[in-house]
Each structure stands twice: as structure tokens, then as C-alpha cells.
Image (cartoon, rainbow, N blue to C red; front, side, top):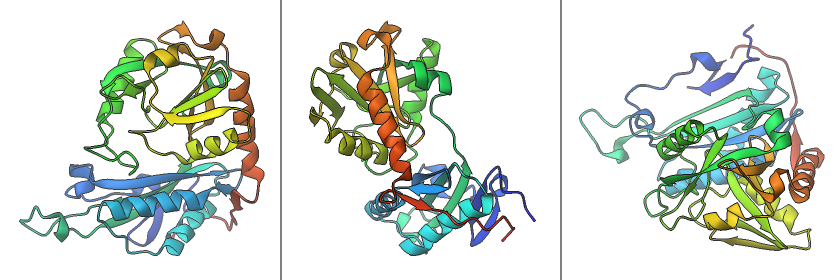
Length: 303
């Protein structure tokens, strides 16, 4: 019986340890980052908003003119099976569609047979316990995010070199992470997260050039319960620097405070009350049956 506790993959109709999962070197998913994916999470043995993640994945597949050899319900079942066999209570579950390999001698993407794979690994936080408590030191990078006219960020993709270089810029400046900008110097998104700021009674999150995250959606819904004006709009860097409160949102951590920008305090340099309230409400939704679906654990076995 295989040990899947460190991760399990579904590929070529088989369940195998994630460390053994491979795609061919000639797959355009590897050669050209020609792929789409999505990442749902299980928390305390329940999937959170799994159908919203599936909706986005299938929309991305369609927009990239790909297809997968499994139905939506089959993919959903595969996701549950991955977590069930792994025994993981808290997990990332990633579903992927790559372009595949073109016909011999061809560079025509229409000749490719698209490939589906999925895997589950233990949950990883975007920020450690200390940072989630005290707040992140965020760098506003000089690097521009790939413009949406080139690559639609609403299609979750592996075009991350701009984000990786921004991360190096952040680490070189002793920051915890970075947020990228558009051509006008407005904040857009960071590596795996969306950005929000509160100034007075107004909360703003970037409207354009960003992945419309499921956690972002959840926070926008929670904000509608508050007596605040909520805007999806441009977010100038100076507005972020002078914000009363700033936070980021991600599947990999929920709502996380930003208390410094390039070592300069934001909102007094302490996590804000709205950030704490939203974070508590977000994690409370993980016990709400309208949002969470229990996983039936049946032990692990090699398939």
C-alpha cells in the first residue's frame, strides 16, 4: 500500500505518489507554459467552494481552446478521491490541462492532444504564522505585470516570470513579497494573491489585470455586509502607501495583513480591525455547508 501522505497525483488514469508524476518533455505545457490550472483547497476535511474553482477551470480551458477527456463531475470526483486516498485534512488540490504534444514535425496547436492531470499536496501558507499575525512587509515592484491585452489574467496560467523576478526584487530589499504594477503605476496583483486597501469608509481592490480569485470573491461578498463603499477600480501606489489598512487575499492563507510597504508603516504599522474581522469571517465560512463539502476518507491505496 502506497504512502500518499506527502502528495498524490492522478495522471494517465492512475493514482501515484506525486513525486513520481511526470509529463513528457515535449509537452507544450512545459516548453511554452501553454497550460491552464486551478487550485482548490481542502480544510479540516472539507473542500471550500469547490464548484467556483471548477467553474473557473472549465472557463479557462474553453478560452484557451483546449478540452479535457473527463467530464466536470469526473474531475470533481478525482479531486475528492485524491484527498481521500492521501488522508490529508488540509490540502491543495491542483487540476491542470496542458496543450500536449503536437503531431510529429508540426507546430500547429490544433494537432495537440490536450493532457489532464491533478494532484493533492499538504496545505502550504503564503505567509508563516508570524507574518499572518504581525503583517507583511510588501514591496511595490517596478516590474509591470503582463498586460491583459497579451495574456488574460482571468485565465489561471503559468506565465509567472514577471512575478518571480518581482519576488527576487522583494527579497533583495528585505521584503516578504511584492505586488506588481500596470503601465500606469497602479497596483495589480502579486505572486498568488490579490490586493485590497481601506481608506476611510472606502475599500478598493484592482479591477483590471488581475486573476479574479475565489478568495477575492469571498471577501467582496463579506464586505457587502459592512457599512463601507466597495470599489473595484484602479489602485494607485500612493493610495496604498497612505491607506488606513491594507491586506492581501489568497487560497494560500485567506486574508493577510500588510503593515509595511518597503519598510514604511501602513495604517500605523499594525494589522487593522477590518482585516482581522474579514479573516475570521472567511475561515468561519469553512464550516458553513453552503460553502464547504465534506470529504469521505477511505484510506490510501495505490491505484
